[in-house]
Image 1 (cartoon, rainbow, N blue to C red):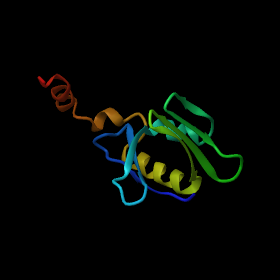
Image 2: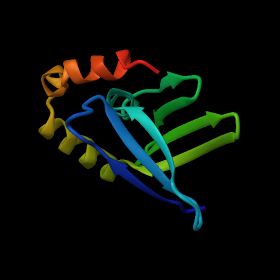
Image 3: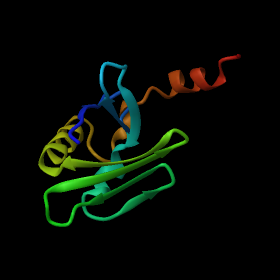
Image 4: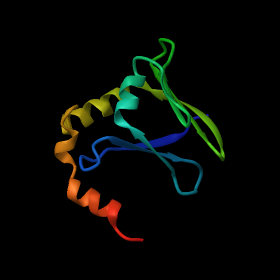
Amino acid sequence: MPLLAGLEYAADDPYAIRMAFYVGDDEPVEWIFARELLTVGIVRRVGEGDVEVWPGADDGTLHIALSSPFGDALFEVPLPALADFLHRTYQAVPAGEETEFIDIDAELENLLWPS
C-alpha cells in the first residue's frame, strides 16, 4: 500500500538521514539511517538487525526492511528519487569531509552533561 515518507538531511549531523513515515493522522514515525547505509544499499544488500537495505531486482526500487519491538515493515522506495536526494547530500557534505561539519566540543558537552 502506498505510504508517504519524507527525507531530511542536515549538514550539522552529516552521517544521518532522517526518514519520516506518515501513517494516517498520527504523528510521523521517524527512523534515522546512516547515510552510508542507504548509499551502499543501492548496489548491494547491507545492514543487519533493525535495518536492512538492498536494491530491487531491476525494477528501479530500493528495499528497506525495518524491525522493531512493535513490528516489521518492508518498504519499496523509488530509486531515482532516493539517488537524487543522496546526491544532493554529498554535494552539501562530501564523503570523507563529515568531521569538518561536526562541532566536537558541543557533542562532547552533550555527552558529558550531568543527568
